Length: 239
Length: 249
Image 1 (cartoon, rainbow over the protein chains, first blue to last red):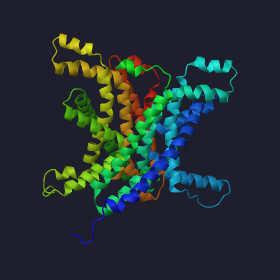
Image 2: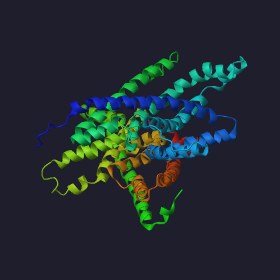
Image 3: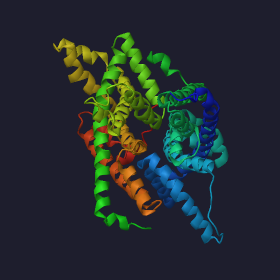
Image 4: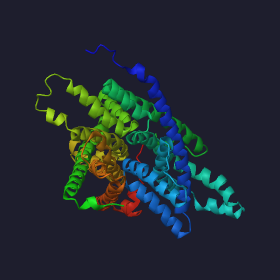
């Protein structure tokens, strides 16, 4: 046996936890941007102006029809080249270097936005039309109508989809390891390769992701109870 | 943009291999995964308690962790453990146990079993008990009631979600390139390395996936239209509506 002490979980605990924090940061940032993209996308898909509608529809359809991993690799390599070309065309010389964190967030948010577009579109369409007409009849401005009618009206319908997407996002952050950015799973891969304790470290990775997804589902079901306050309780009748 | 590599017969052959591997993995894990899903759903509804707990546990873990981590866990984690068993290298199973295809199929089967099992469980529970009792009254045994009545009715109830799962499975296949399986993405990566190209091969297989997704969507829609009793459901919404199914958590 080797005379050196085997590297163990204790040596890697700190880097792995730091990786988990990075993963959560990526996920939160990508989710926030994805929410905005989704709102803009849904508004565009429901817009009366046809070119805008076509643009948003092709965005959400194409992104949802291509595998996430492929998109992430494609946007990572293609994205920086495209940005360099764009900057050069604008007269800025040199190569554009984007940090790994920004790329990770950007790519995941771009994918999330497409799915979020569909969730919001469905949720907005589910609001009874009379409520929106009533807001117009009372002279609400478009902003006020969005703030007081559309948003609270669509949230209960959108929340299950939003919760799904958040769970998918946490799991998709692992794909970022493929392009070599040091988040949770990339750190775990390094730990496993250097200690040769593959089984141990991949189990730890699984447990950490499980912890994140289970905590999130619990939080989302509380949130759903909150946005559905005042609605008749259908679960009581079902039982 | 440089697509000259497309005329190279060697790359053409590799791309065909990649496409076939992708489709074989899709079909094999869909069939095995659905079988497992039926088992897992029934284990949780009617199974003895330990079996029900096992099925719930597997379902929670497989749905709560990234597929990529699962692939690494089975291929590197379990794979290395198996390597350490004395005598296994000489056994007849070693050829299979070394093959990434085996681990990819295993992981995808468990994953499909977990996600689809959850959908199927809900659907099985929504079939009115009176229909099963009617089957019994007609003299069917419990097994016949299950195969002729309960399961077909449940599938009828959740068919759009099931076909949505198939699309999600197709889009998960590129993950196996990380465990050195020759799928389309792995072939694209090899072409990129050998020709110093960054994104042209990726764009090409992106287009292949777009076409595959659309073809699969159209095929699954035919299945839905021809499944008795689902016609009305499938008619509502455009044919692209199947893409809009986010994975149920």
